[in-house]
Length: 461
Image (tube, rainbow, N blue to C red; front, side):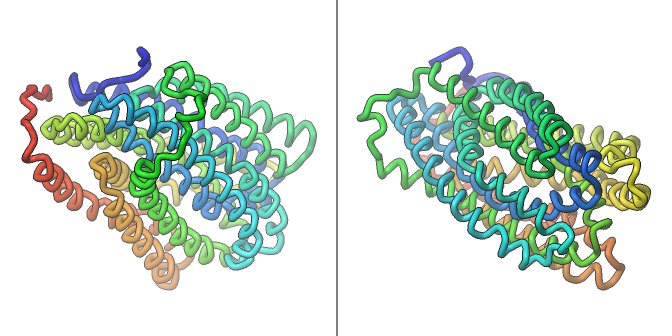
């Protein structure tokens, strides 16, 4: 193998999860720079309407890009299980089939995205003054979905093998590249909102190539014809694990588009303020996502090694880490949120104060309830690591029901600010369901392996 892989079936669970998640957190921060820098450059260099145009595409773009991420996260479950079980032959074949499936799904979603972009924007009642810009931005991003798929496949393979460092390096370099290209394309070449989207795709392409190069160095990937022969048994298993997670993302995104439908009736200024906070949302969430990825790998490897006591200890560890990070992030956002949000709105905009105030109120609500989102990621990923994709998909349905219900009811009772509580309600409902489902799933997994030889290693915790 390589020194870059990480066996998470041995060692202190808290330290393993934290130090595995740490480079992922840093990598996710740099990945979020894609959208944050896009929004800042667009808002400062083009104007409030352009910022609203970017925000109007968020949920539709989320649906396809995060569907791809969900698929590849499912693929990584099987890879991590074979890695934990030390089954080299199946591990290598699974990696090859994951790349093949990733390419096929990437092409499929590119076609679907380009076909549906305009009709869906119209269906969501996107305001006429931002419709053309929204369509331009979305079309370029959808044209690059194969690149998004490649990066997610390669990075998920590396994470499943315990290598969080390589995706971090890729994101750091790509994040810097995106900043430079944003400034060049938007402010230098004056390519407008399309330039910001193009900068994102180019930066993502670099990160995909960097991760692919690292996989090749692990000698787990070969270019012999036989190695790429389709193994329908493994493909079926990858789809069984990946498709429910992908459907979960679709369900969540549909609920988000209902929210966008409601939001669009409040006008460009409100959409711009909502968008500014949503661009920080990724930074708020990145630690939770990283802990989720860590638990996916940790649980998958320990399930393969049949070390259930370690899974329990790991879950307690990630809960403690989540509480600590949420407290720190919440205090920082409430204290320094307004200056951060001001970066998204040009100082020349006459409605700057109103946009920033709308954004700050939303940010405070999200920051104070962030722990629900972190629990959602931790327990959802643990269930996925146990090999169950159905319950996470159901959690997506719970999330959607909560989000849609609040979006359709609360604004009618307390006005437009009611939409600020949609995310909190969605996180809370899904988190409660997942905590209960995790306990059931772990018990089921232990019963399924009850005929096997017990693992006697002492768990540190």
